[in-house]
Length: 55
Image 1 (cartoon, rainbow, N blue to C red):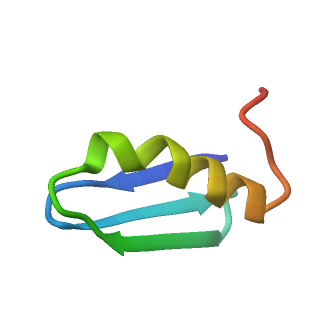
Image 2: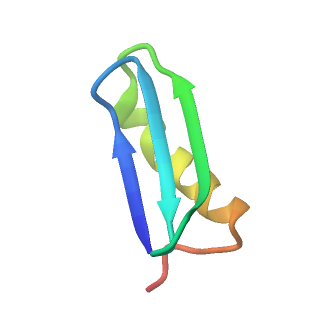
Image 3: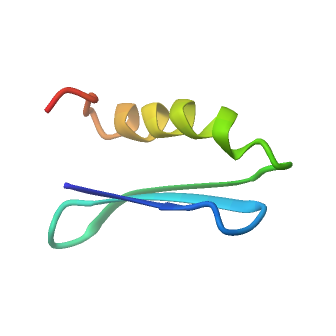
């Protein structure tokens, strides 16, 4: 499983890739608050896929 993170602009994006396809994506517009928004957004993305942070 690969988690892609793009915080290079105000449009933040996350994608979860299982080795053969992107299984979920999440994007939002941020006002220079990337560090505050990133962890909850990753948690939300994983939850939508039925996954947890546990290895």
